[in-house]
Amino acid sequence: MASTSADGFPIDANQVVEVLLNELRALSTESRRKHEKLKNVAESTIVLVRNIATNTPPEILHPNLINKSVDIVQPFLLGCSTKNPRIVQISLQAIQKALQYRIVHKNAAPGIVDQLWQLAEAECEELRILQTITPFVSSELLVTGSSLAKCILIAIKLNFSKDPSVINAASAAVRQLFSCVFERVVQEDGIKSVPILSFPLS
Image 1 (cartoon, rainbow, N blue to C red):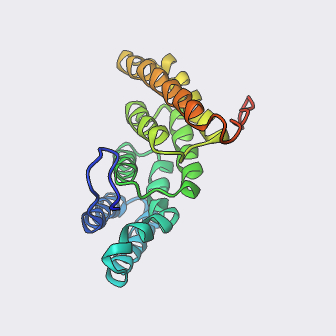
Image 2: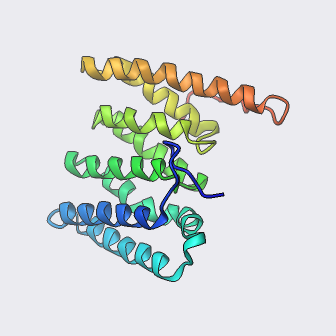
């Protein structure tokens, strides 16, 4: 069965490759003046994605992108760490698209959550953080345990933002996140125990 996106549409793996390459090129261009390390990582990842696309049969291209997602999202995590508004915007947009096309492996999830946490602490691109968290938690079981707790805490923290639009979005996000968690509990009931989340988180 062909994979489907978070929107329920069949995934064209070649289209996913083009989306990734476009986002990586945008990141490389934006970072070329002040963030040379980021630019180099973005360009190395462009080569990686191209090699995957060239050397992988079409029927397993999407799974191979998932398997390499830790490396593929790395430049976008570095982009978030710059706290540069434009670079963070590009990076979060790319992460959102990776989630939409379901190419994020569960092993890549903790690193993404950590960067979202750091951005929230820095009060950087708060609305985009919320726009990223909600589909992230809703995407199958990518985020669990302490990473799931961090996502919920980020949304709760942003309820105390100075921006009214962020507060409204955060309030909606908290409701949606708890709804997703309760749905998980119902689905997993009798299959495995739900882990107990410990607070505070480091």
